[in-house]
Amino acid sequence: MPEVLKAPLVVEFPFTRSLGPVQSAFLTGLRERVVLGVRTADGRTLVPPVEYDPVTAEELSDLVEVAPTGTVTTWAWNHEPRRGQPLATPFAWVLVRLDGADTGLLHALDAPGPDAVRTGMRVRVRWAAERSGAITDIACFEPYDGPAAEPAGHDGRFEDAVTGIVAPARLDYVYSPGRAQAAYIAGLAERRTVGERCPSCHKVYVPPKGACPTCGVATSEQVEVGPRGTVTTYCIVNIKAKNLDIEVPYVYAHIALDGAGLALHGRIGGIPYDEVRMGLRVEPVWTEGGRHPDHYRPTGEPDADYETYKEML
Image 1 (cartoon, one colour):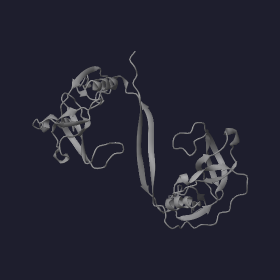
Image 2: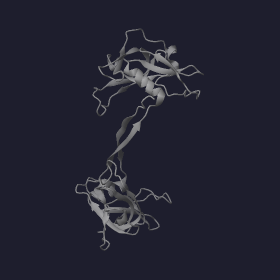
Image 3: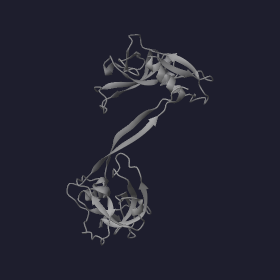
Image 4: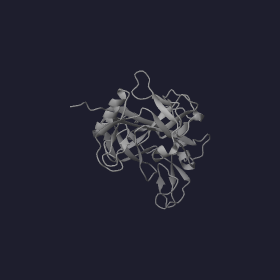
């Protein structure tokens, strides 16, 4: 039985967003060890605060300080913390209704085990040693058996307010390519590009998916395509990617390999970025030990006629 291919993959990017006045005050308050909520027209205090009443959609702006102590309303035990979570040891996710608030705030509770956690238990904020204006300024909650803290009545106005945040987004997963793409990968190891032909519409798909996306029927007939191809569309990249040692600007293009019914993507090199064009004929360039073409370069052939690749734009 052939070996099942699999590999760990990571999708990661920073998500940058600006803050409205209510969220700005809330996060700036955390930096200053102040927890703020927002009061609705009917007297409810929402923590964390929102810009609009979730019931009436009325705009909200009446900020009010609440206590850093509160009560657990519900919880779940986390046996195995993941990368980037608040605590490195097992902890409880808890919804805490802070004293003075009418809604729950989700965060971590540092507890020795699930037997030490219960609905109705009293907790308080444990502040992070270094704070920058983010929800992580609350390091976690911790059990507390003292009296409710008294808020100082802060009005939500701060100097040097936080106006935006950068939240890293990351997805770790294990990818298994399946039969069709495993054959494609094996072909690349031999510097060949192998697709599969649909038995109904006869298009050759590269990379193959194991089924025709148009006809919905299984594909199994392998067809070697290329190695040369035609640039169908392209873009000029002006932002340098993390961990990618390529100087900007450079061109990334869709390339219809000869014999293929679908364009794949690749970087164009060996030509100034502003000379790349639709119809440019290209060929792959491999590096020593490379598992796929490093880039594609011009072949020197005349440009392809538009009619030959217009269906693959």
